[in-house]
Amino acid sequence: MKRKTTFLAIGGYQPFLFCVGMYFVALFFSIFICSAIFHVFNPKTSIVRKNDAPTEKIAPANGKQVLLTVTK
Image (cartoon, rainbow, N blue to C red):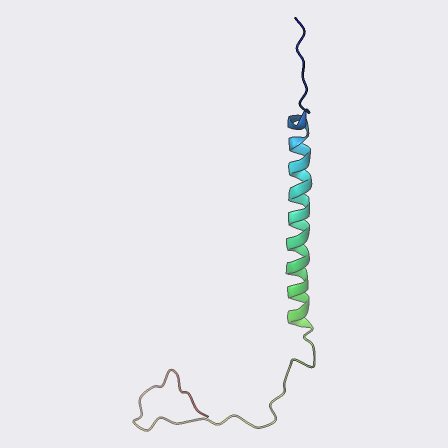
């Protein structure tokens, strides 16, 4: 008896489709990581603000070490 196969042989393409999918995922993440590294070393000048005023050093009143202060 002869079998009738009406479904597509998609199982043979599965390793190929997996490799193509992983290629595009790796390409996406590599572009994201490379652009992030590029923007770390070359930031936009409109975003970077240069503070011309020197920072103040606040001495604690009781002589203990201060880990965090919030000033306005």
